[in-house]
Image (cartoon, rainbow over all chains, first blue to last red; front, side):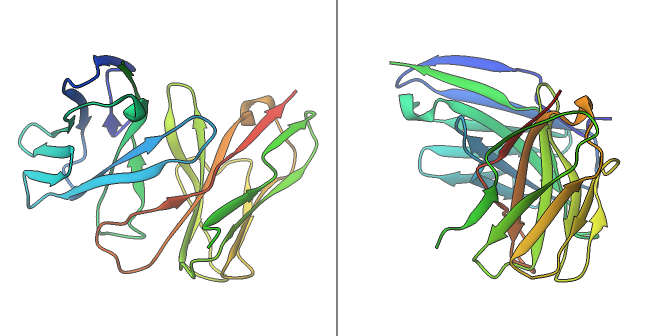
Length: 113
Length: 114
């Protein structure tokens, strides 16, 4: 049973516009969340994270928002650039055990020049 | 630093054959992981290790074995490959004690089982 869900397999956005990628989770024990970016034929790379004690974290063009009551988080990219075209994975974990991560299925973002 | 490396990059096996995937990291990380990525399924944890000489099962461990004889290496073995094990395999590592649990990934191994 998928504990982390990304319901949009793909998203196309015009260069310069905002990209919004969404992620939902079911496990209320998750207390931190990460976004990874993946280019073809490469491994995922860490992008940004957020703790459950916050509702927003910003890093340059990337902002992650967390709505705990809705068990929903989103990644905003502003402005979107062609180099942002990649697959984005949402991941969640908690501090118990080995702090393993649960990944969503990914959203392929295409930024159109 | 090379980071996390994986060997081989590609492999084709016949059903029933065995093979070992090698993961190496030069960041002195305690924790190491093996994932598989399948279309529509995201990344799923196969096995992981929290230190040299220790291993544990993840979400989808059946049909795989692992070993962590040296801190820098984490091996994933398939004793008798099946077509259902056709996938892209990623290794990852991280330091212990970091709250945000950032994992560093290797480039992946694409395995096809015929």
